[in-house]
Figure 1 (cartoon, rainbow, N blue to C red):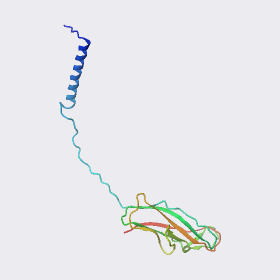
Figure 2: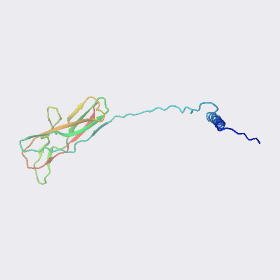
Figure 3: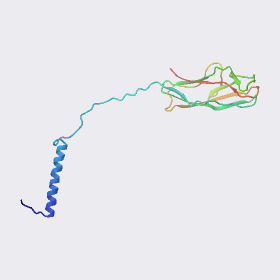
Figure 4: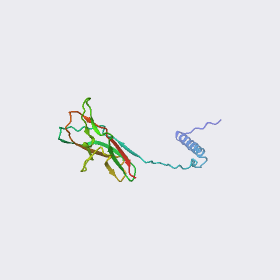
Length: 181
């Protein structure tokens, strides 16, 4: 057996040389002897998004109160607010109606009532008020779809206060948004 004696410099050169040779062998093995590794194509997929017709009304004011003395004309500007969202390209309309013929008193034993036609409504910012009670009153219409997130809308109410007993008189108002055809 022969013992070889190397200087520190020679020993480092031999170790580095062996490391490069080992690394090259590992690289050839890992890449299939020089071939580039890649995955087989998996195919394509198509994303489909089906959008259906939609119309929603949200945020409708649950109640409002007009207060005043007999003979006074009292207005509630922006008394009812709501939001309508639709993707209908021909737009939508909003109506308000009531099945009640009168605004009924809250106090038991009060026999007074107020004709529903005394309560009038308009779209906020328009000129003419329309009385309730003779069918649905249109309070908004437009010939285009709403904005993303919906259209913020409001209605004004007005009444000339009648001569009736002191009380709070109520009727339920029905709001309806419909798509324009």
